[in-house]
Length: 234
Image (cartoon, rainbow, N blue to C red):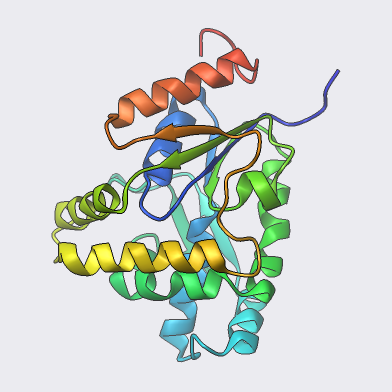
């Protein structure tokens, strides 16, 4: 009998809907949602708030080792998929700022940062009953995941979704700037030397351009049932 924990790995480029889809899949299956991108965003936020230069790889990596980041079930009814604590302080929405958007790909490319965060990610995954969203979950963090999904969408669709997300929170959103940022992050994420964004050989690719969130969620739930990760009536 396999002892591989029930883990659903959801990878994909920036703004492809990983967090939203992961949240709904986790809710539907009763799994824990663990968005690894939130950890990299928290490190980026810490660097910005503490005046650590983003281009100083050594100091940013040292910061990643020093701070404590926790992801907990959502404790506020404000649309958050989870609560993010950085050294005990709630930074759930702070990590979604445009300033963090602009620098998180650089920070996440640093080998020292990735090493600092990888073990925590694996520890949580080993508990099983987990949906993990990120960019290298199925290829680096937890390649033994029994279900790997790669969500894809065009840069234009992803930029529009990010605009809508910001506007829904009453924040300014410039489509052209966001589109440029999405394309920049795609280039950085796909060409970085450490753990570049790529599709795992055994991943199921889902193009979300013309699918609703509900349709994507239903497909992933179907795949989870097909692979016996959940009960058929879940």
